[in-house]
Amino acid sequence: MTPDDAPLALTPLDPLHRALGARMVGFAGYAMPVQYPAGILAEHRQCRTAAALFDVSHMGQALLHGAGADAALERLVPGDMLGLRPGRQRYTLLMHEAGGILDDIMVSRLDAGRLFLVLNASRKAADLAHIGAALPAGVRLEPLPERALLAVQGPAGATVMARLAPAAAALGFMAVAEASIAGTACLVSRSGYTGEDGFELSIPAEAAERVARALLDQPELAPAGLGARDSLRLEAGLCLYGADIDETTNPVEAGLTWVLGKRRRIAWDFPGAPAVRAALEDGPARRRVGLRPEGRAPARAGTAIIGPGGETVGQVTSGGFSPTLNAPIAMGYVRADLAADGTALALRVRGADLPAHVAPLPFVPHRYVR
Amino acid sequence: MSILRFTKDHEWVRFDGTVATIGITEHAQTALGDVVFVELPEPGRELAEGEACAVVESVKAASDVYAPVAGRVTEANAALADDPALVNRSAEDQGWFFRMILADPKAIEALLDADGYAALVAAL
Image 1 (tube, chains in turn orange, cyan):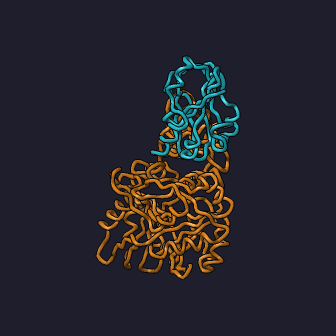
Image 2: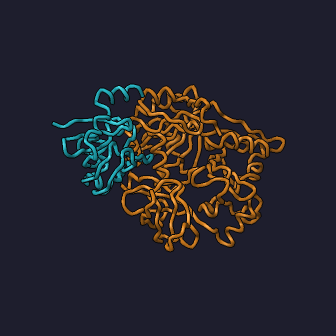
Image 3: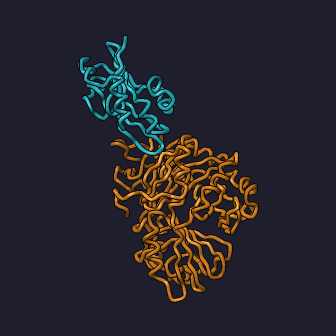
């Protein structure tokens, strides 16, 4: 954790954010743009209808070197890393021994001996220590603090990339490759965290502003801040680490059973495997669900979820307003017997029990390229 | 002839001699960003000075609105139920929150005038 009074770190795009009129806030120890003058609603719609550029340079980046890098990482995650082919990316979880989640991360195989990792900003210091402590001889962890990370997200993102980096535009979903953009060698993946088709670009810090400006020169693109990023990922039903998942949530109750590799579910050889297996076989006590409040009042994280008998049956972990649905939406954990779509519940907002029902996730369909 | 006053909590009060109309200032709506929901007090409710009596929700967060002076609520702005963004477009006019009869009309004199409020905002 970063103390509240510690000076905020700056991303390589800090001068650009300020030049664009961003409102900067502290997030995970970094000064980050929460919005630009267009505002969160407009930035959100920009991403859903055209394309938006996000600075996510606060996230951790690292390389895992060595012929045994995949096997070493498999000792920490429940995904199939040995089976990750060159040029492919996978979402996985750093697991706690008790079955909780230390972080959710992206892993890309660049070649036989190199894995590229993207870590949550709030967790990167702990993750790097955790991974570094678990490595055998011959495997080396190289943090990449001198790299920026940009996300181009939205249906017009592919048009922009086809213009600036044709090699990147040819990537399939969850594929990764090197591509030159504005004269800079970038590591590009066809992925993101908005539910839209999109790209993430890992760029040397000194070239980040040049690449960002080249992207923003494209008519389809406008900058978007962390505010829109949060409402977009909530509409897409994607978990925010520290809100929807943490060391006390296990992947089964979080609805992330799909991250368990087939081979790993036979061997049960990852940290926390007994607890995860028990949750799978016995059914979890609670489940992460989508919630649609009736009316217009948003139910924020921490809101108590009330069952049919008036008892508390769970808690909202992410909640806000969906610009696409023009209505409030939330995610939270409820007692497993109340997790079916359509179940009538209530949300206790400022002392009043507001009617709501369990709704399927995502709230807004994913539009990943296939 | 109405008088316009402000609070340090970024509310405005327009008093026409009988009824006071209350809303949030242009500065407040800019700071909040896109307003997506406003919860207003019921007509008939008696408010103490400084009592939390309305909630304005932006995309990011919920903020309380406080009664600038004591009194009884006579009307809430029904237009905000369907169009909360009216607060962003017209904070100090059509985006008003509620109206009230003041318990003590003189209480309004203790609030900030336009110059006093402008100085407060300038110092932020």
